[in-house]
Image (cartoon, rainbow, N blue to C red):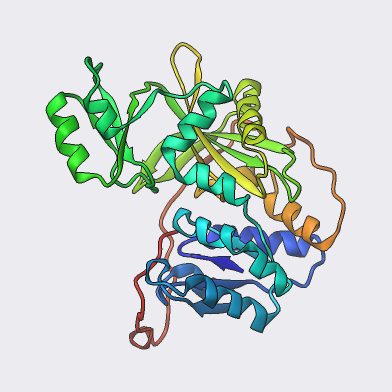
Length: 330
């Protein structure tokens, strides 16, 4: 079952193809806070759950899992990760594996100040990072700087600030703001597959060419050994990663690779990596089914691009699809 399934139709299709390739009888469930989530209409069984912020979210998931005999749970958005990591034992008790990193890894990745500290302590290049209050107290500022929420996601509340006045103004508007060095260069997202045992098997770098509403809309696979090694180093420094971990970094004009963020979940642009040959769904389903597959670390194609476009899901009797909770992201 995919939780907060939102718009992840491409990912569902990829899992269906993988199940067919492995000759598995696969039943895909989807859960979301809105009946109008497009991907809910592309799963075998859809479930409406409470909004994460209202309470009762994890209880509802555990009940659905137990009632339907679901054996694998895959969370898809940042705001639910802490809840599911903390309750991984509850899913195990009803016979379901939650494909999620450890509570400590999730805590570090959700907290961007903690992320910066861990990266720095591990000797991984990352922009200097301060709390907003600490940044304001610095005797000198080298603008531009980058301001964002400490616990944010989907690029919401992210700003490039070019003066002290902007730093003061935007910091008051963004909850729990942090401030980072501004890093010029090309942004790359790395899909790091760590399997169920936390061992890094494959790293696929995707260069962002265009972003729309916080999610990549155009991207290019770049099989660069240095960038791939960075993804491996980050996952190994975190430890206890599970499944796919998304690492974001900037490659500067001078060739530096500076890690800016980590999300322990499937990234929105992961269909590109899957299409290029890093078949994460197949590898995950094989591990779950006890099928041994050989995974080559660089078994994906270079120079493959993803150019996204809009596609519609049409629903009959739509007026009956009354929303009882706030739509989730994804």
